Length: 159
Image (cartoon, rainbow, N blue to C red; front, top):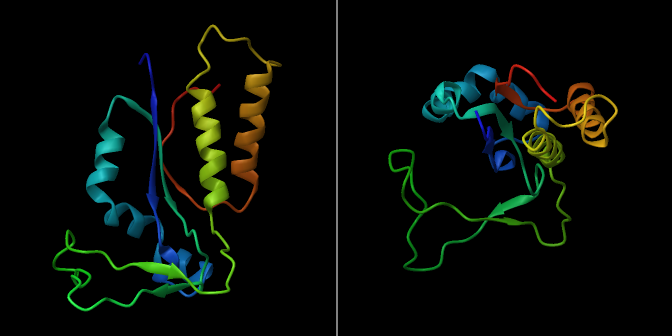
């Protein structure tokens, strides 16, 4: 593969469905994440172009910080489960509340790691190069912290 592709399937707004991170982790176990994103999971797992893939639940506002925006008269109502392509509810940050993002740092670290790994070629300098040292540091950060993501696909050999 000349240009591998890394894919993060990001499940956002989990703070609107769950009261806290523990409840979200309980409700979104590995099997639930796989089945919820089934067609996308199948696509990335079977694609020869995708070298690495994860599912990553995130929240930009943080648990307990989102409020549903009131609908204006005549405005299309948010869709129901029967119509997933209808209007989407609009969530706002509670007034006077600072955002407390959840798991976005994991997305940043994962994106940096796999973006860098995809730049390293077999002819890149070996052990001790700044690029490979940075990859090792980022990988260690993902593995040692209490990060939440579900790995779908991992390349056989990583920088």
